[in-house]
Amino acid sequence: MKFRQLILSALSCSLSAVLLSGCNVAELGTDNMLRPPASVGDEAEITQLIASVADKNYTLKYPKNGSNRSAITMYDLNGDNVEEAVAFYQNNDDVTHIHMLVMYSDSNGWNISSDNPVEAADIDCLEFSNVSENSSVDILAGFSTLVANINTLTCFSYSDGVTTTVEAGQNYSGFSCCDINGDNFSEIITFQLGVTDYPASASLIDYNTAQNKLYVKDTVPMDPNAVKFKSISSARLDENTSGIVLDGITTTEEFNTQIIYYDNLKLKLINPLYNEKVKNFTKRNLNVISADVDNDGFIEIPQVRQFKSDNELKKPADEIIWYNFMPTSNQPVEKCRMAANSFYSYSFIEPKSWTSDSITVINNPENNSMEFFEWIDNKLGGKLFEIKTFDISVWELGRYTDTHTLILKNEKYAFAFSNENTDSKLALSDSEIKSGFLIMNENTV
Image (cartoon, rainbow, N blue to C red):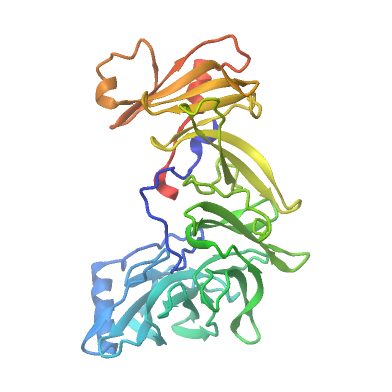
């Protein structure tokens, strides 16, 4: 089934959240991430070129965030299938400036296109995107200031050995690039965490061709309680709308989701899930982020609630309800539901035949199991089945093969189920239980 193709966030909390002191850009289609120079010869020549323009004592600087974290990054800026190089260094006797070098190669070897000194505490991030509406990919470099979560955006265009500065200078905590208004060019959407003199907000940064500058086209408020972001993703919301989906962590260590998109009729940015007077329905304690859960090309956002229990000794499991957000109606539309086991990082996709509140799921930590029951008149009904986790060494002894059927196993665990085979209308076949089981993937946490 389609769910088996998804890349979904794990429920593991062991991986730390990304502090939004950097860009965390979600530009898609970039295959130059973290690449060193193409050959040892290129690397040696580029290093010598840097040394020739820097002071005798200098230090290569590495971007702290974003997709490209090498001191020297290779990228084909002008689409001629030949990579240029971007590097950062700091002269040891000038700690107030970071230099960004743009270099290109020709038949005579490597050359300097430009040496751009920027007053900054450090280099935050380096990204590439076509924002100046020309045939080349622009260089977007973010530089850290001495104030936490306040960085400064710079932009440069390259063509035929010449690097041109695009006026910028916007402050940000993080940013993402995508074609948010459907004009076939990338725009920059900056995100500002709420700090003194800088309210929490998202801004659409567009390009003014006549003035060769980036400017703020529109700004929308964001949740001031968000202090970190777990994930920033550019994504399709529907057939006609792209947006930015942000999964954040609040001051109370809870998670929530915000969506930023551009309304081409109202000509303004929209953040539909934030209203200072209304609780965000995605607010949750479970560490799970937005994802395209059914592989249909549109992102889903999670709401988490607990199943019900009639006994305080029986701990209800978490239920993740996934929604598409539809800009046309400005409303979420439910897509699917999953019962989640956060300890062993798996879930069970609830079949459509299970209506809301017709079943409940109990976590049984003493049995290492998740147990599925009917829910009748606000009470536990008959047991339908259980999914149990075994240490792989225990399972391989063969003691439980008579009572449980294997779903899958890895080097650490075996996951198996026991089906009660009741005559309930909610009962599932063995194959339905197997196909509903899903191991969470940690790659997008």
